[in-house]
Length: 167
Image (cartoon, rainbow, N blue to C red; front, side, top):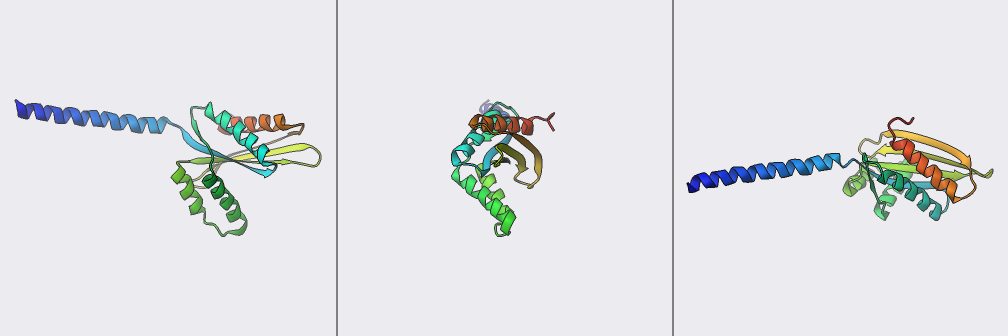
């Protein structure tokens, strides 16, 4: 009876670990796309923070996306991406390595410019960091009257980027 009991316990333990493994993998698969946000453009550091916060706020309410707070390593990597595009010195593989190390699948890059005629131009693109493919882009232009316009535009850009029915 002891041998039968041991065999039963082995099978029960195996079944338990299989269920646990399936649960972990299923929850990981359902977690959504891991996204970080990076703001750039001819705006102040405070305004870039408003842009990032607005986009992250919109992402955090969507079950298909998991927002990741940007940190200095990620920002540095994205700065190198910009340098790579203009000078060709930094390999794209390095950007992907940093993103993978952080667990990020996608990045939303938001470029904001306030022109001399008080127009705010904001464009965003969602980039797959594994392939480098631009998944979707969105552009907006509004009269600039203050930071409320920036926040509203960033929120609208994020909504349009992550909404499947939006073009």
